[in-house]
Length: 447
Image (tube, rainbow, N blue to C red; front, top):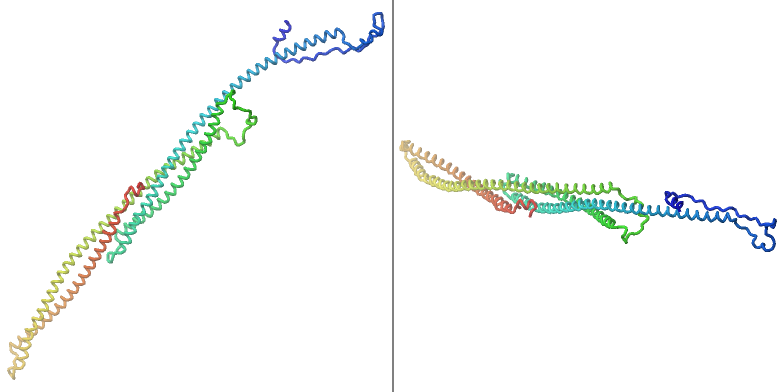
């Protein structure tokens, strides 16, 4: 027993136990020789090959030693198996716990990236909604600009119906042409900006879809990892999957996975920043264009007011001159009547003087004398003829002056009618039409 205990307490080292070897069998047949030898027919059936007694004891001892060696090896193997089982159990638990922690850390990372992607997607959606509102403002501003354009072109067409000499390229027409050119430039600018907004909205949608797709993949992966984190050795739904250890060729690394998500977020942030800048640009653009249109509208209105005041003043002055001309025509007609009466009044004295000269020319002989009376009658006739000639000449001048006054009256009346027509076009047609000019808020696309 002491020897067996010593063997049990030895270190567990596997020793090779040679198989028991028995001495070769003795196949010698007992011969019937000598005094003690067996012979005869009585021993004939027992004369077979047998082991010797020493060999039997040696075989028993070998069996004992073999049993002891097998038991000792089994004990060592059992002890090693128990120790290995304990170590592997501890290793398995430790590895499982570490894997669970790693999966938990992965879940935290994915949750962080998912939150960033969700937040960026929401901000992109808000930026896209803002751009849609800006696009609607641009479209409303573009529609509103058609009203000032129609007003300005209608004013120009109406002013084409002015009559000479009022059909001039005045300050009002210059301001109206500036307004038309300004509206055309603003309309082109608004159309280009609408195109930019549509393009940016498309980019935002594409980037939002990319973020949502990445977020969706991460949600699916998060659910898978969360389910994996709940697995334990006691779980009933776990199975063997021998081929799951092999890596997929398309699998990403931790660095490429993080870089992909970071690039997605960077592109989303870039598009969101571009949307913010475009929103600020659109806001300033609509504000500036509305102010420019209103300023030009005010400039046109001021030009119309000044021109209408000038027309009003010119018409009043023409009417004043017409009133004086009409009064002068009346006076001239009276003057002509007086001249004709004066000429007619000179005919009687002339007839008297000529009759006297004619009668005195009939004096007989020496009585036909060039006396003082004769000279006076002759001078009287000459004076009367000169007076008549002067009166007739003055009558001709008066009649020419009257004709000139009539022409002036007609010209003044025509000019007054032209000024009245111009005033009607500018004040009643154009300025009244310009009262429909949109407000700043409407031009800025708010209404």
